[in-house]
Image 1 (tube, rainbow, N blue to C red):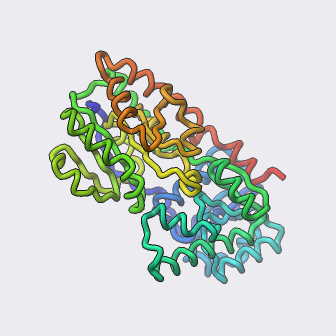
Image 2: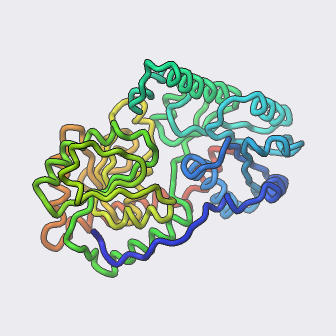
Image 3: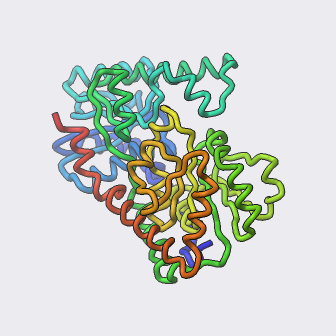
Length: 392
């Protein structure tokens, strides 16, 4: 585990401090008016696909006024929607009110765009989604929910002029499904994440990556649906940890460890969900960030955020070779890619990088940081966001 990192801090999500009145006023300022719509603001998709986009435009594009709405704002919008130049509907499910809002915007000449970050719009893939998430697809309640959820997202997407998504693989799935135009804006790190992450990697550098002698393997689950993904590495983890008492496992978020881990319980730490800023510290303490995913159409639509959350704090990643990880990670240079049958070998090779002075580890960590600082910083996203919203 890495030592001497800055402490965690009290943090509130910025959007919780914004009043409806201020957001409605912001919609009417500026030469060009942009608004995002998201059903219920949260700390996952809303942060990456709405809040982060707004922060970039508000900071680096002074001629654009940009704000967001949610479902509870609907009765208060009045004629505001008709005054917009661009309306982005982010992963929202069809409702009559949403249909009415989109119709009102389009009638007024506003461009309406749908933003989606997952393969959750095509009902032909509901069975794959359910299997990947480990759901009982024989249960009527599961079928009813997921066919309804995916169908409503697809219905809302079809009302829009074009789509924005997170990577080229998912973009191609959308084109095949809709026949429409799709543009790509990647997920990226926001200002708060970057500032705290800079403090973390600066502390690592100042101490020459000082460690306490243990080796901390981190698995950070963002949702309760990753048990089948983690199962890919369970046998390898148990074998490697049993043979090397330096190894400890840190599990963050939602994950239920099976009984096979019981003999290793004294070397396993389970963290509750963290806000996205303090999560950077817990990732920064770990030597290795593990990101196993089943390899199928659904998972290949996922973004690479688990790589850049780790790389920006100088933590090396071992990940399954889904599309987005293959685009971000150069094997053995700024991280490692592991197929299902390779996890023992890749873990052992990664641990060997810490031998002696640990120079091999530091070199890879610094390369990962350099990749993430350039490709996934909010400061470098203005042009790609503008092109997705305004280019003909």
